[in-house]
Image 1 (tube, helix red, strand yellow):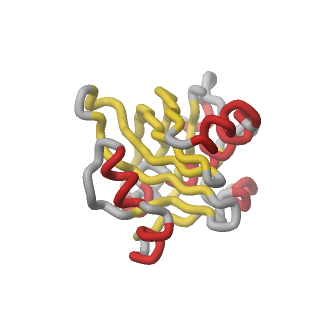
Image 2 (cartoon, rainbow, N blue to C red):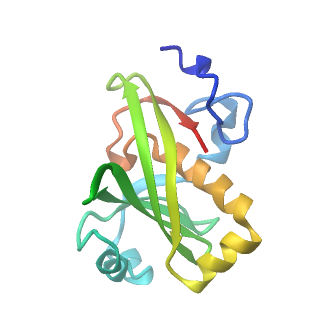
Length: 168
């Protein structure tokens, strides 16, 4: 498949896909895939978030942009629908339980792509409810940016040149 030929993809509101190494990467460079420090686990209350959601405790990795105060954390597959992936999406003090489906392909160390299908964004605090009301477009635009930086599996991604596609 030629990654640029996918006609129905919406790519970060750009006319071309967001490919690592492309002119558009500058917007995504500030997102970092990393293991979360113990200090940040405490600062963001991640153990409590894990308990509130379906995860339990463990697996502390994220894609974060500290300057924008945004992160995305993989929590696991939904227990009632194994095709649905659950994430914790933190956007400027607004916390969401984000559900998505993804379809990926590629070669380890080479080119690859992920097509993201939105399932749901559940607000988990008052800030999240207000963000969806007053800044919905910005919340979703930043979600696309963080998913682009996340690639196919965050810190564990094995794809060198990644393209993100969105159906939302």
